[in-house]
Image 1 (cartoon, rainbow, N blue to C red):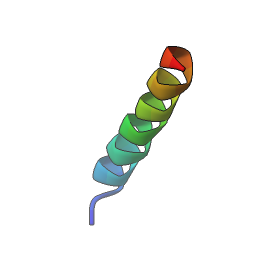
Image 2 (image 1 turned 60 degrees about the horizontal axis):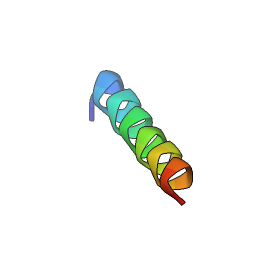
Image 3 (image 1 turned 90 degrees about the horizontal axis):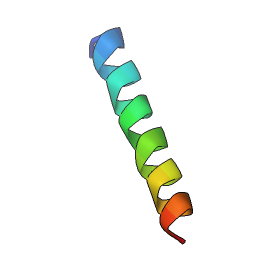
Length: 24
């Protein structure tokens, strides 16, 4: 697994969580 891929995945997850919190 590439480090960049992991970072991208984490960022995506974080963004999703932030978006969910903002919508709620």
